[in-house]
Amino acid sequence: MASTLDEESATKPVLVNEEDPLTEERLGLVREVGAQAVWSLSSCKPGFGVERLRDNIMDTYWQSDGQLPHLVNIQFHKRTNISQIFIYTDYKLDESYTPSRISIRSGTNFNDLQELQVIDLTEPNGWVQIPIKDGNVKSLRTFMLQIAVISNHQNGRDTHMRQIRVHAPCGGKGKHYPLELFGKFGTVDFQKFSTIR
Image (cartoon, rainbow, N blue to C red; front, side, top):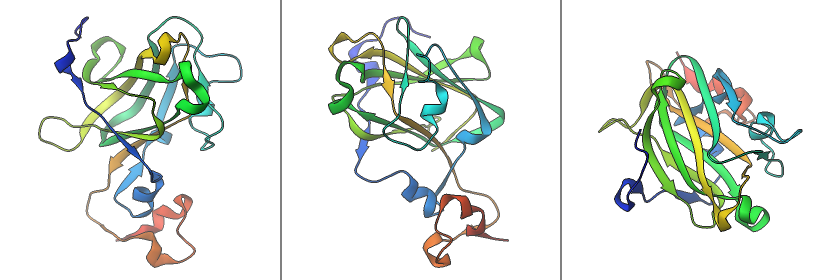
């Protein structure tokens, strides 16, 4: 892992979407796999822990408590395909708590994490999409992801992240149909009915 980064190594991210990432999930293009992982944090203020990142409520947030970098660790029980990560931030509300530089790392455990990309954010407001690629392949098979907040806006010390969603590409033997075809079954809870075997 490189200790210093030059300007060319930082990727130009990132798409700030007007749309909810649930749209792609409902269409059957991707599936959210964060529930299949064990999540941990480098630090948090009491009551502002990892459960706030996963509660699907945009008004709640994880707040770190300590020195940079602030880490979100996502460990899967088996090697999992990852195609994109969505992070919800709100610069208007969080100001100096909003991340300005994020590193995405991957590996089998804490000891062999490799940096995939560094993303610079400028006053993000809404969902930030981070595509994850392995060379020319549009997804990455990994046991562990780490999201590291390297710096915050206005040189802030602690960070706020409001939501994180981890997507895997939908593939396999079955054909996936848009959930709109199934009427009332258009919620994420009923996504298992989007595949006909």
